[in-house]
Image 1 (spheres, rainbow, N blue to C red):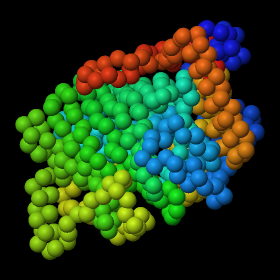
Image 2 (image 1 turned 135 degrees about the vertical axis):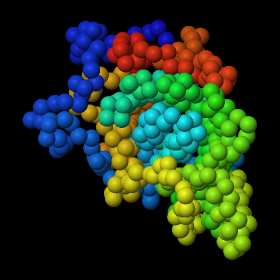
Image 3 (image 1 turned 180 degrees about the vertical axis):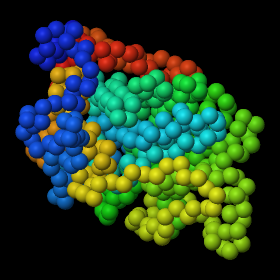
Image 4 (image 1 turned 30 degrees about the horizontal axis):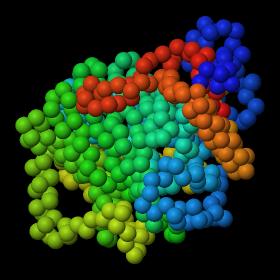
Length: 466
């Protein structure tokens, strides 16, 4: 679009473009006397991230999802408008950034000299990326075309930028990079959702790529399937299932992870088991645990010895698998009888960060997720005008105003439709700002590539989407 209505100067009160080139540290240090909203500071005057949302979870008791979904069985849900009450106050772009909650695992992998040791930590990182989804039954807001999200964590040593590069189909691209040039983590996700009567199945199509620059290694994988049960009645619960194959394109090593379906009696609920094999297909390590809890690594011989012992004692009954598409009469959450049984000789790879005690009153957010939509001091003048934090519907929901959130969501959706009609009338194609379609150099497949430049803070040609 070329009209002035679609673009605007986003200097946000700064005197010139050059003044945009400031350190993000400016947003983290401030005079405590300026604080008026009750935020706390550390003794050295540094701003401290929040530990709670402004308002508690909005109740869904008076709303019926069945009235919306009853005609959608077997269909994709990407084009179905859902009431805002079924959302959580985050954009899907912010939800993607939760992959970075356990960035310490990437730093750990960078520090290891052995390729197999690096692979098992990368595998733990791939599992940790889905851990925050447990009990997160709210739907993130669909990003608007051109919407962006930036996340800079100097304490964790990285920065991330993501952009909604396509609306139909909905595709979100992201790129994270180490502040010390140790790693790059990037990918694009096209979530396909289907409703099966009592559950919603989510297929997160897209490839994750992690580059460990010091070791000149690149790993790729896809995320497991996800199913949300009891959409209509009962307690909502989530399972992840499917095979995840992590490939080290430099060494030829592979890690095959099996996210196990729940099973008839819940025996395999949350379980993940797999192994690392080298280029010659020799098993080097076995990996096991739960994606909601922790992951361990062990020598294959010790693992096989343990499994043989279990069979002798009869503690390993035949597994009853299931899929989301084949519904059973009883879809209730199975009771988990125990946590991970640690085999002697195992090494702990990762353990989930405990959630805050009041998480249930905050859409079951982790401590990390609670911070994602926070407008840090002086941040507004640094953000692109397309950043999720500036979306009025998400901001209203975060503050518990469901009526304003619903009205703003409808306004933004209509504005997006009007912009699409205008482009169609002018015979114009949408142009992405920070990502371009290219080829993943490691898989050879089409992939969205970050073009750079976002953190130069030049936003004068950003679209007016809010």
